[in-house]
Image (cartoon, rainbow, N blue to C red):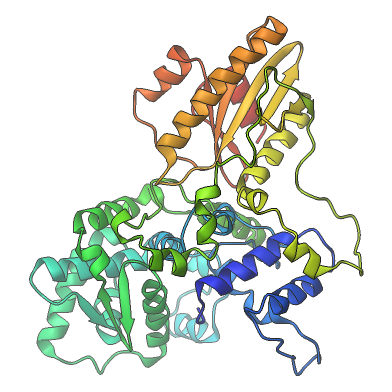
Length: 484
């Protein structure tokens, strides 16, 4: 993972999203990146052309922010990628969330290196088709970031300095194949330190350790200095919060397990899983650390954070005014060589840009309902979607959520649906169904099903990368889920 910063990742993602539907998106993205001043116009020696996108874009699929263009030709942002450019997750929170989730077997890069093949051959082990199968067959199921943080936390609890160097990590932690065995790794670390001999470490693998140290160093959890990693003051101030999320990510139920022998299917599954983290799996920077300096460093559009959910104008309406639904996402059928990148960049409607994840979710849901033979409408001043079939109507309200705002966002959605349902009944004399659609999966308390299904009679759906999941058992929710 190369050196990156918040503004570079933001610029790459935003340009990829803005021009994702143009066949010549690479040319337009390159122009936008250079025009924005974040990147310089590097001329490639092999082509003599500016190709900033090619030089820098690999960080995006590596972090699960977009699907690799190896599998999907046009740029397609994942949920967490949309969250970042919408300002609903910060830069350090993004890295913190992903460094906790990333694991072996990885599934993102599956090629076996010649060195690994040579070692397998020397050991008399049959060489599998890819790294994923090798790790599965070996019983490896571990999240390295979680293991490193757990060991650092235990060092702190036992009165030691919470720091590791790369050789200690290689000798003591790398032999561990499951997170639940972290105490064995801790014992090995004490033994390595007692012997004081770390010169037997395999030099070839130190680079992998450095990559993980660098990954952790971009998060809220740790700071990297040379070949050492240490717990940051941020987490030392609340080790209980850190331990809770480490326990969550150590649970085997939170791991991604490849289900196919086909590389492309596993790859798409990988991006869907790590690109759509559940609410419980996301790290939230404590509010008392979110200073203006923090916001400036972690939210490139931080001055617009308060605009989310703020209406541009106050609209007084007595009725719901429906229109046929049309996605607020432009479709581009063919390349337009006359696209003025400067005008597009300067003319963006900021509030609209702050709700990109919402627009994508509404468009996905509308497409699913249309496939199910619903007539789909919306009202730009109120209803996200109204779906009608066989004379029965259902109002859908879509809410993007994160760990910081999911409770007030759900309450807001419930209030809106109750109002829209009442107003629509005044118009038609028939009470419509209503369903709240959440942009992330989450675990609700046990009382929630009865509250939504019986008390307020509102259905619940959660969006995943490639599906909708019904949290209540109404007929419409199940129909949408089963069509996924």
